[in-house]
Image: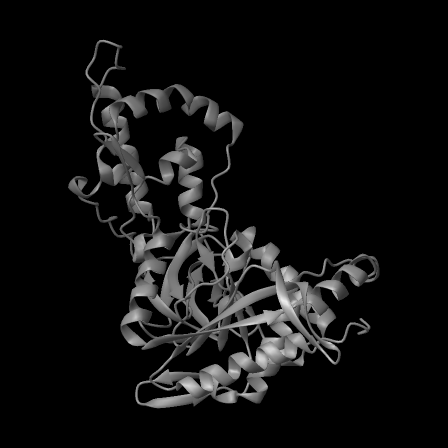
Length: 439
């Protein structure tokens, strides 16, 4: 009998293992090609492992909560049709009470477009807040479920994941609703839309907006950080006139030679990486009553997404990159973050984070530490301001480009002296910029 070994796929350069969250199939169940078999999770990203073949699941190599290394066999699938196996177990039904009743008016409108959706093959896609397995996408395509419908279904899987059972229950209930509820006329009283069935509802004159899944995760992460770390802030003003003049002078040539646009961000990242080599006790994390001093300097780069959420891709070994390498890495991560193309490896193992609050005009901010790190630096807006300039011939007033740096650090393990010294080092590195520097 032909047997296929389903292995844990590679998920990123530094991702070597994953944890089994739940099995979506039992021994004896029929598995279709591209159908998800098991849910797994790495440090920050959950995912499904689909089957590369169709057949019968005959063996599970790991149990729930066990750790699997990349490349290990996690299940055996028998691919021959005549293979004898237990009959597929009955699919457990999801209680109808757990599935919100679709709004009749919306269903009536959707029914008019179902045939068009089926023939036009409108694509269903995952996004920054929800992940849909290949099986769920196939069911949606087959049944004419639109993206807007799918985004409203409450999932019963891990982290709110929409499962096969959720889809079947929703489709069954939608079918009953469309049959029993006639399309409303203008004289009909509009049915109320359950808040759990749609992201936005109205209550009187106010608008109530349900948080996205990513928004909920960020909220919990921020609350946990505030409750965990004793946040302290230090601020310093930096004169970046030399950097501004140098960038204006070389940016056209830099882009011509490298194909990359050079912004202020890689310049600041380079300075932060150097400062962390000078003050390594800020490149640490807290593990219970222990301090973990990291050998690698991996800079998190907070990036705003189009939907208003935030993600933090990581520049690995930032202290080993020259300015050209740093620029390429910054630009690549920023583009892939905004296009939802980051891999699990891209957002892991950060040891210190930098966020740019000046991108929206703020002159300073008090950012929340990205756990389990102990520090985060906020870059304020660069402004032209009048300033006192000291020279050998006396002081005079001139126009300078200045900005504020805001440093939030964990006072449990970083005292005010270290937090302030680190900030001063970053300032000195930026203000001593060589205007004749070659790239």
